[in-house]
Image (cartoon, rainbow over all chains, first blue to last red; front, top):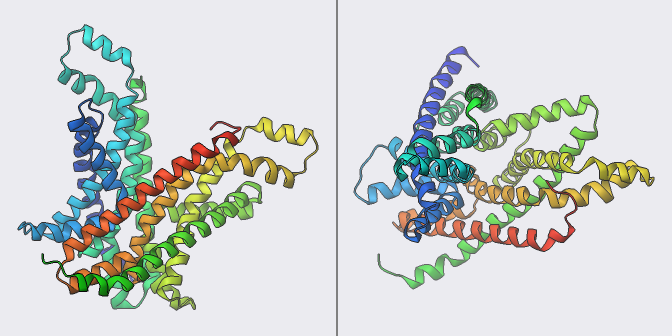
Length: 213
Length: 222
């Protein structure tokens, strides 16, 4: 396998990282809202929240991607396929992250919330200053895991025509007739990126260990 | 959307076959992955370093790369090393190997969670190593690994959809094909999503029911 081909794969892997990063970030924001809804005492919020989590965790990501990719144009939204791909990945990861965050929110010590009540913080202030930061911190290791899952899952967006790492390897394998080398090289790049995410995550985790309740 | 009864009747046999393929790949995949994963876990725990290190590497590589890449390597790369497989066997093999890596980690954690006191007690009453594995470790582990195994089985059900990419004629492939022939792609994908959702929810419930029923056999706590 020539150096030129490997360079193309590396470029495509940057696209994979970009798509995954955007999806994880959007997914975290949606996940926050969904987990807050799922934990809400009001059934009007908790039922949709839990249904969202159950649906997006219960349907294969490939089916979700195909559905969103075809649904958006059917609704009259002619968006580029990369938008459909990121929407699909974001919604799926949002469901998993909501579940992780729910665990985080439920582990926030009651004493802290009582203290916040006594100090006169409003419900929103309590969410912003106490519950959200602690839940995020508790859910951080799962967030790193989820980032790795999404990075791997992003290979599925190749089916809706996004030329990320997997699709690039596939195209190059078809044109050079060297599938073993190209898919192995793509696999190696995925391994390296995952290893970077995992080590970055544990470094970052160590840096805020002091704040653990 | 006009409702055509003849259409539904005419696609029924095809749908039934596709459902069969999904169930077959799922069932065989889960059982194969659990058996292979168990052997890998035993090999890593009791085998020499010459066995343990390569196994560790395989598990890490499989867990660190996308399933789709593994499938492509097997399906498109296989013929170059004399391994030409039809889509269904390739899918089964891919799913089994992929699942085995995760199952081996589940079993590894299970082995570690069995209290050492139980093993020591078994040694004291004179059980040999094989008896300890058969009579103490495996029964206790079964209870310890049940929740994670059910979870993994559900993940593998969802991964069977990925097999459609290497043209295994399972539900996702067949339904998308019918959907595009009939110009009802979105509707058929929506039904497909509902179907998987239902099956996943049902399996989750069945798993929790099994856990509850078997909980009386639970000696060790994780």
